[in-house]
Length: 247
Image (cartoon, rainbow, N blue to C red; front, top):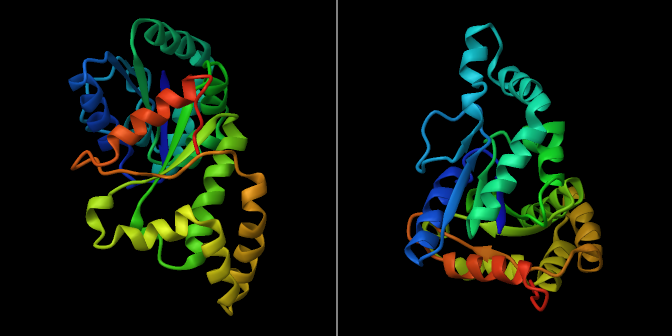
């Protein structure tokens, strides 16, 4: 099973990748790790594949690139080796129960650069996990945004994408988030009451979301406490099982 963790900087991808991998290993499963972030300096797992062996963003910054330019240039330099990396991931998949892929902190680098898209296209039915934190969910329209962004990842990469709220251990009342994320009708009804132009746009978007969205459910996770790891493992199993249903 190949799982790709995607999310904005600070969403906890690297920490979650290591923690979820340890959880799987404790349950007797073999796990391989892939680091695709050329800019990370410290990771909490031992990668079986690490693109930093090829190029690092900080080396490019020493050449005069800015932080963002260094990330983009690093993937330009990785692109000629994308088929090699794809084959290496496939080899890990044949030998292990799980392959966990940790993507760059700059999510747009992975989604919009040809390297990330071509690598995922070469993998057999990977499951993408789109991570977001509670700190970005302040208004009803924010909840609409994260649900639609998960749909955009699905469209861009051609994968089944599971939206996952990370860092649930930091919120006092998780149920207040769940009612917006799990119940599209409730979210739409709240957006209808908002007076702003942005809320009107979100209302129109969320009104069609049930028709557009694939059948999946939101997962609630904590890399610190392990909350939701059993649910994430179940979703991964269901994704690869012909009788599974991600709703």
